[in-house]
Length: 131
Image 1 (tube, rainbow, N blue to C red):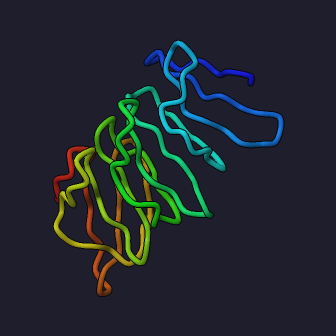
Image 2: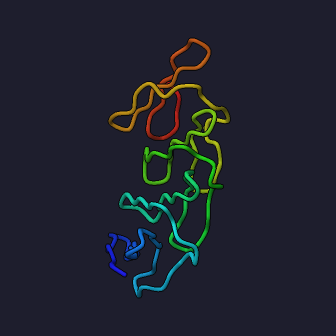
């Protein structure tokens, strides 16, 4: 297995058959099942893909969300934009911070997101506040 060391001390392990695993700093697998793909963004969270869908994970072995999302994007270290049928804004406790979903994500830049819902633009900053 070839390891890619992350800033938080965790490792992503790659096997020759294309499978990848989330591992502790000592190389022990945190999740026994492999992932199709893993992403990390300088936080204690990872995004893992199984059966073509993404879920949010942490390095303690907790699957935070189900594997239901076609996309998950980092907004802030603890805030994520997740798309299943609609876009939702989740934190690391799987709470929908805005209590609603949005049809389209129009723009994401500099920690701000613009959504379109019911022919109305909604602007949100990186703290999940609508303005």
